[in-house]
Image 1 (spheres, rainbow, N blue to C red):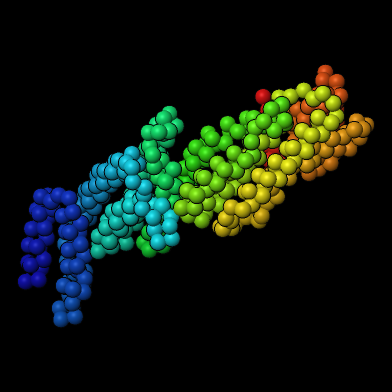
Image 2 (cartoon, rainbow, N blue to C red):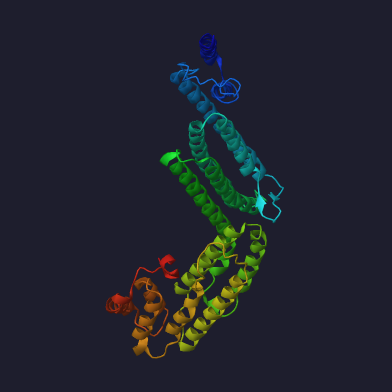
Length: 428
């Protein structure tokens, strides 16, 4: 009787398997698992061991594989449709006039990470009702689609930013939404970690690990890109002021460069406070480097011809003073120490050393100054030193570069691969 029942049920289910669609595939797979388990045949009151009874599996392996593949194809179709809809909905919000919502700590965010989490969790919860093998495959597919979503998100953000920078009056809430997007990237990484911890098993394999790493790398890169968009917007305003540094008008005090820069920073930082701590610290470090790079570059670009030593010394004193003001202003920004790095020396610390070259009266000791500068900044180049010394009105311009090349050759043992602010400064 048992064999007859089992055979008839198997035949019926095999016929049924040809008529299913959507989530019905996994419903049948789940029922087959339940049939052989403790809720039905394995129940203590029946205690029927199908293998011991010499019975074949309820569904042959080829049908189980077919059902599994069809279910996975359904998942992929769902992911593509749902994730496209999710991005389109968020893009509509970006173009609106309402700022994004904030979490209970004041950090801007959108609902997209939560929606995506629910999508993935729903499929993994269903796979959990079948077996670990299905969980492993659904987890890989989910992570692959999450990485694909990161690319779609990146493309949408790029398009959004391009439109904004072409007309900065177009999207009134650009900065708040870019902050929310940047915070979302951390949320997406947290989602990946959560699923990996909850669903990964010893049988998941290298493919699962690779998919997971791809997700983390994709959202980390997108996070950095998003912060760079925020900085690009800030420096559209800051660079207008920095471009005046080193000019005759700047030296004579006709421009309030540093005051304007500090006011601009203060204005933008008010928005940046809605960044998550790790994002704020990353932005803060990038802001300091970018600002120092722009300021030092402006100093080294010859925009003025000095009349004498006094004017040259006044020039040096001015940029040292302004560098100190900028260093103090940046030092007042919150530092959550979330990046796990040791505190670094401010890139503005090089300005007094550069000033010494301009204040120097005795040219016979320039070589010693060069030696000291290379010890401190081993990545400083011939171009940097040539530009610096060419600011002096008392040095023969035709010989400066050759002299610097000779000095650098003598001091080659001091030059290392250590990266400082000068590695980022490229002079045309």
